[in-house]
Image: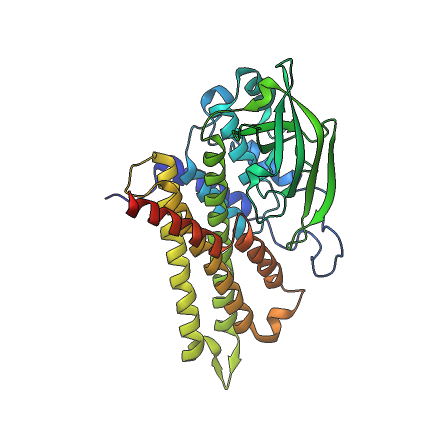
Length: 379
């Protein structure tokens, strides 16, 4: 079997690596020093550089100035973005745009997609439901108006990233017939109120309050499986972010322990330190293997005894537990220096905790995997 990336995937990754090389995690104030959000907007300058490099439309086809690449290419770029804690809605924007291209009406595509590639239109997704612990599809109700031309949305979605700055938000909802639909609504839609929230990372989130928000029929996606595909890509992308962050943290730890001396020797030469670092390296390799398996299943739609949801659950289990262990070990091996908020490690720790819990902690995905295994065994 050939496990190498294609030339197009590698080219996208190298381009992203060059762009993110100039980004540092100290570009915004520390969440430890700021009571509210650390910034009102994402990094617009970086966003434009990504647009100029054609990295915002990688998964779109040529009709929308895209490269027609796949989830593997996106995960390669997200891995580079997370290494520098890049403050851009790359995952949400790309996943939302692909969903609209694949399942949206002609009118919706014409309305939203023309300016995705150049960065002038920004998308995000409400994926955490009412509380962050329940189903995202049950948080909002969508009712078809008697005329048949519009729908009305009512409900609440919590912890929506970049909602204050995005042009459109994809909101999952359910109809009275329990059909899952996706509504694409502008962030300033009538009846939509955005309440401020702040994430563990210090980034600005929004709690969406939808009170009879009108949605044109053409802006509602009713295709079966559309939400599952979007959620799968978001979850797998989160695993890629965790891998990139963890890799950067382990490199930071290796460099520090190689220079820090005790009893006249670098602490990296001590067996207890080396063993802990080796364990975290193994975590990262497991995170990497399970990530590419999940991304490959999404990209190729390959058949397997278990559905792709099983591979995605395994990847998220490793990503959630692995990134937590990596940053905890890093804090331990850095000693008191790791608690210094002038040193970037605390920012990586905050982002790691956010990624660990985003779209479900390991325990939640273990339950999902168990249900899939039980269903497969019984069938």
